[in-house]
Image (cartoon, rainbow, N blue to C red; front, side):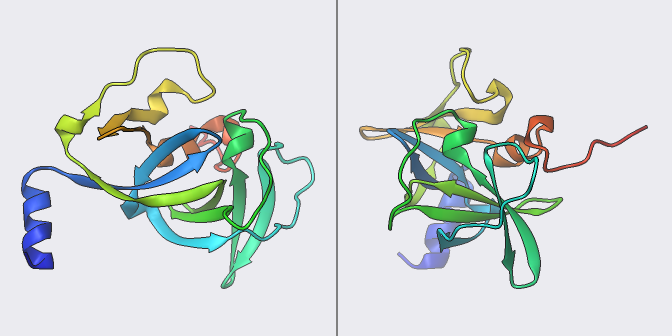
Length: 163
């Protein structure tokens, strides 16, 4: 099957592609269309008075990019920064943001039928930022609305709009 035929098939069945990554023991997925690039971790420049989960900023080809450690944001046990630790650079509608994750797994294609609603439970993640739970074989992915998560007021990455 050619790449075009494969893309036409996935578009017709409503499948979407998600970049999967690990934080601690959990696996998450984000819309691949929001991902600009994946980079190795390098210590960012710390910003005074920023929330603890904002590790600092890096200069990415002339653009100052805030770096969010998702392990701290989601209250995971602190993991070591190692050769698998990566920064996913996201291109969101209002800005470019980097997120630190333990490792990137792969890109998975999920159909609407393979995504179930997430249960309403208290967690470190606002339930409005969880698109659902995707399942493929034995794997369970927590699918995130990364744009909504990164634009939350608690993130301190966007200024509130005053009326």
